[in-house]
Length: 179
Image 1: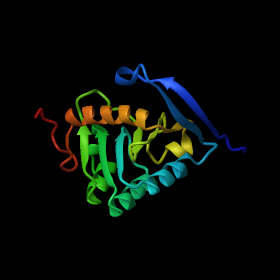
Image 2 (image 1 turned 135 degrees about the vertical axis):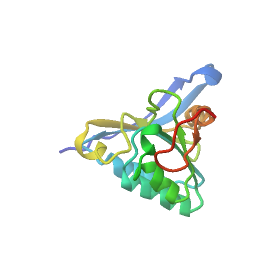
Image 3 (image 1 turned 90 degrees about the horizontal axis):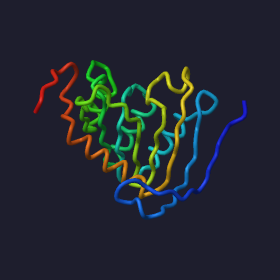
């Protein structure tokens, strides 16, 4: 099957604070099951130099979890906000926590359905792609890779907002309480 890959430079108007400022972004896309999107995500994590912020609903992809663990061992600050479905035993939250990666649970909304990684404040990886074992094998998913410090800043602002609404993960099956 032919690999589909597109890269383009776009000029867009960003929302809220940057609305009046044009910005440039380099965007590429990846589509499962025809392409190895998980490999591209892992490669991006392996190239991280300073920081990785994760927001995820389902999070069971061992290659992505292991890449985050490697990044943390390289002193890359890796932090994750996950949906409450990750509070069960043997979830992405327990594996990340075991690797010393701080994890918070976004329990306030019905579903914390974000699926993004922000790497080094410049690369945003997102799309319909869940960071799960099923995504690369069984699902038709899309992933965008957006190189833009301005767009990354918007996602980081949202990450910070969701962090304030989240609570620290303290192990599987904990009770959800209002703090």
